[in-house]
Length: 334
Image (cartoon, rainbow, N blue to C red; front, top):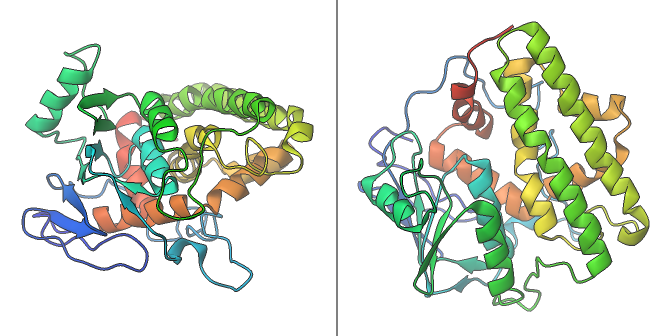
């Protein structure tokens, strides 16, 4: 992407368009605005495939092949442009906002307008909009922000739940998704897993913020312990899930979306800054159920598509985009 924001290719697989000088483009009738420019890549730039020698495909973030051999991420879908969803503000790299971005993809619903905010250079309109909706009007503005039916909503978990309930099975295609568990027992185990996996997030930041080797070693031990607990949750629900690899079995739900956006970030960012190999850690600690879940969510077309879109929006590899995003949390390198 040029610093003027003059050229950003349409990110959706199989579609191509260019952004005008104002950073505005249309994809499938949706107006996408890329706000401001992004700074230079952070020191320690990686080329595609340089994170433990892996590309997105080799890390498992690639679509499954259908029986006909077609790429699932590029299959044609009908799309609802819901005119009552006035605006969706997000960020190309924020893992929390990514949850709602995935939900919109899965539910086959497009807002009238999507605004990609640069969180390092927040627009005044974004600040004002967030202040109107947030409990703490003076707080640091964050994404996502969704405007629907005259209401402006913040907080990723709440917006995700709202989208899942409001657009449940409402997409244009015959197989429109439902992200709400159809079975309450499976839903229990799904939420148990998602809530437990979420405890790894502050430990991830603890690893990044470590200021010496002892702190890093202690944080890494805690992080691995969190992964083991998440794996245990999947094992506990194995009978209820009846062999399905998702958190609720065969059905993909909000309890997959809540934790899954951190998986590629854990893998890429911890490998770069802390030399931590997530896949090796899972194997060494016998987290077989968690490995299977990561493989399943890693092949979701919604995740594959949005990761590709991040590269298109930022004009760099998704690895570098995530490394840049989390650089501010790292002050010490071994």
